[in-house]
Amino acid sequence: FPVTIGGMGLEIIQGRSGRKFGGVACNEVQVVEAAGIESMGSILNGFYIVNPTLKSGYDWLSVKAARNTCHFTETPTIDGGATIYVQQMKIGWSGDSIDLMRKVEKMARVGMLIRFKDRTGEAKIIGHPDAPVRMMFDRDNKIQMGEVNRVNGVYRCTSPFFAPGLVF
Image (cartoon, rainbow, N blue to C red; front, top):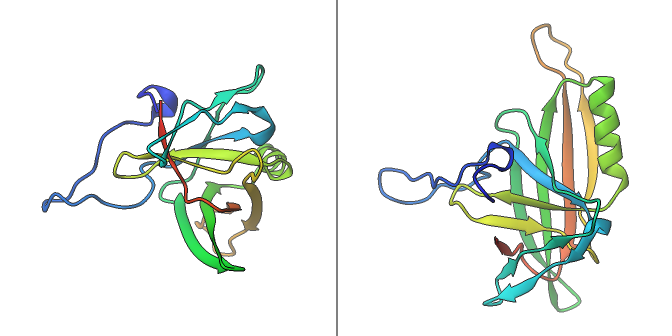
């Protein structure tokens, strides 16, 4: 991503040993309706998608999450002799206001693509116009005073390909 999009930086976080940490780099992902994809772009070295383009009237939407709530997993499974990748992005929002619930419900109604950066600085995309990511959500209204109500979203898709990298 360009440095200016949604405040997402390009830094690589490294430990003292020089190894790179895992996880999602920030508490923000970007989503677009699958119907808004004009072209997924070209493929570079079989692993990277170059410049997905959007149809007129569509744009990537930044989705900010509560601190430390973004989590991406990708699990390969065998189905009928073929490898299928189950890709999942978990994200949480503090509170459960009517405004937040309207936005969450709208996102749950449409298929999407998600792009994000991991802590190594790699940009990735999950979903495809033909196999979009779907979102489900739950609400966690706390019982104890001082605890924060939360809405938890899970974006999920299955794909014959692992989540490719992005090149802009």
